[in-house]
Length: 185
Image (cartoon, one colour):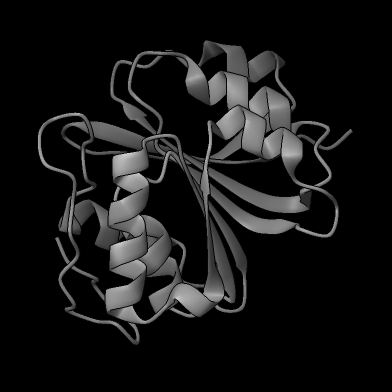
């Protein structure tokens, strides 16, 4: 696993041993960031269920102003901190050891995000829980872009009655990315 582009291009990143996390492959990460290329420079990025931190580090490498990494696993948090130190990006990052929904509820209006990326454990319904927590959260604004990574068989029928609208949907062989914005009232 490595940083694909930007100031830290080609730098290797550590990942967690075992199968508790599924690092996003370099090919999928490159496709994702090609689709986000106009959103990243200067943005405030939130990486929920951050794992090794590879997505947030990629955003920082490509010009995000700041990234907050939220991860519940202490072992994963250590890996994120090591990857940030290795890439020398820790000055533009904050790492929180807590669950994603609690983190969202803890942010105030002074900490607003332009892009929110989440890669929760598959088939647990956590993406719905976190998006519901974000609906009235002061940490997002009307133009915040939300990206959800999920298993291919994840049912998103609930989106139609949610406060979000899907603006783009990208399917890969093993998973998918949904790009969401808040529904206009």
